[in-house]
Image (cartoon, rainbow, N blue to C red; front, side, top):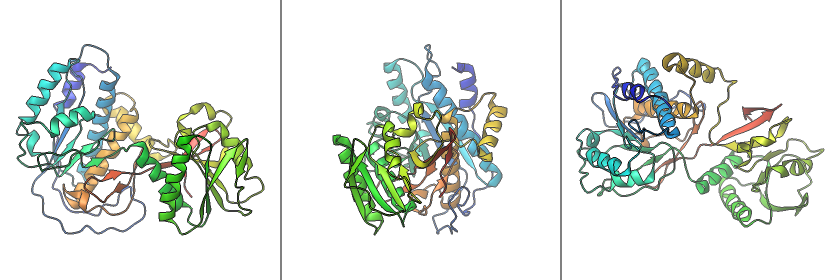
Length: 395
């Protein structure tokens, strides 16, 4: 765990950049030329507030402290890099849970909502826990000077809640719940393979059937191709696969040991893929001795260390802070670059102006699903494993 002194040194840092100009939001995007729409001008540096549970004054070792610190340092490094491209921001940081004591932490929330600086941020990032979000958003003493244009939940999906007519907040979730994530996987499968026949594979499990029906509904909206559901039992599909090449089997079965049985159904066929269930990639037991050229694994957090940008970030993080970044450092960096580029292109209220495009970060793919009052990131990474080494899948 990093020492409280180190924590305080970093958290008390406020950094500024250069003049903010509306620019093309292009870095890290899938190939697409973008022109920024006209938005209301923003004068001066962005005001960005970060409220996370650092536990800086806690006496017990807390892994969350390291995670939050790494996230913040990655975020800060992303902002610092953007200064060279014209990004300008005044950043304030608050510890929503400075101690291990719940009563004292509630007093901290009371102090926070009474702070004028908290109530006039253009963009707010955090907190992490739903309970802390609720305590902040619905606090009786919270009277906005200027409601934030974007209030981010950085680590987990939090259902937006009202804020005295100024909400709902959070209005951007960078991570989503399982139902939305499975829908995103289904949508991406249909979009990645527009010319393939899609066969959804389920088993007798109730949850598998629910996922299969969800996949089918989402895919039928995304493609005009025939989408069918097949049940796997003892290595046999009912109904059988169609007698053709160019098939994608989309697994809705949680057991990764069935991968081999499914792939055998593709023998002597061409241009066929198996897309794994979301949980398969997390089970590292099945990597050993694996040269899996037929299976594509959907996941959320994946860092490809064959990518030169990833290696460069790791070196720069180490040179700057003296230790290797965890996945939280990568996550903070991706979110910082995304927020920075979006604000530079469209101003702090960028959510209403974002194009339908994907920002490819170092560990996350960020695609903001708009519609309704609370956009969320439904980006998914797809990975293929060559000789025990995972790589980002590129069709």
